[in-house]
Image (cartoon, rainbow, N blue to C red; front, side, top):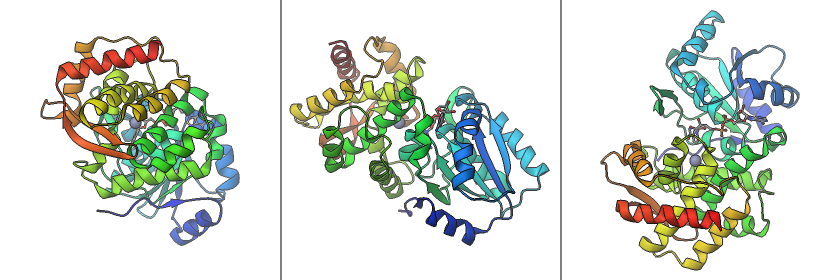
Length: 345
Ligand SMILES: NC(=O)c1ccc[n+]([C@@H]2O[C@H](COP(=O)([O-])OP(=O)(O)OC[C@H]3O[C@@H](n4cnc5c(N)ncnc54)[C@H](O)[C@@H]3O)[C@@H](O)[C@H]2O)c1
Ligand SMILES: [Zn+2]
């Protein structure tokens, strides 16, 4: 078990952190969108002084590549960035995954801080110490476990985030409540829509769940798999290419709730309540269709199903997950049909 993430908030904690850290140089990494939308707020509120270098990459998953990593290593060398420097990743999961990998490997590791600017980043991607890039078309194929020195949560950044991105990230908070915190679920379901997605106290609670579960199981073998709820099916749907991560995971959660009823004794009423909540979010997933054999093939190739057998994290009660449950392909197909029926009604 390792420590949970060091989550800090503006302004006092951040100031104290920076003073204590006193880096030799500061390098800020953004993508083109966070450079435009988030850097001004960052400059105004993070008081890092005049002297910092700003590097920006193209927005999107394509920047999570070894080519981008190499290009940034070269710039860091040119800037004579040493091991006492601090890299600050200001962006969504793409930037914290990319910057985390660079921070973990450049000169065998310089420190880095994550400043997540998407809801998904705040409650998931910036936490838990995993980082990495895609390689030869496979997501997150190259990477390390290396925690950020600190993660700064500031929901102000969410003001400029597109609605569909906000909702997609919110699905992870719904997942956190369902797998680990019935009280969080009760608080969420009282305010329909995603009205709480910019609420700092909710973000904090959701982040704490990810952080706690990830810290309890850094090698990804046991309880961390609970975070995979909705994702075994969700990743396969996402890989087809037409939906955002959270949209695909929302469908995955509906299918996996069906499986939870069948194999983990989840109460059907609880399952219906969660499904109704997901549907009322209004994500554009109503006309989703699928080829079951394609999806099953993708699931078998998912790195989390290495043995070729399909294993799932399922819900037994609200706030409790069970991991490593083996499921037959036929039952998975049944769950996909179920999800489609739910979406189209
Ligand atoms: N390391 C982990 O544990 C972990 C966990 C989950 C996801 N991830 C990774 O996270 C990535 C997805 O992250 P994401 O959903 O944050 O995507 P993203 O970083 O691509 O951000 C989504 C879009 O929003 C823009 N954006 C970000 N913040 C903004 C803001 N405040 N205002 C306006 N625009 C803004 C970005 O430029 C981008 O176009 C994937 O690569 C995934 O693999 C990693
Ligand atoms: Zn996810």
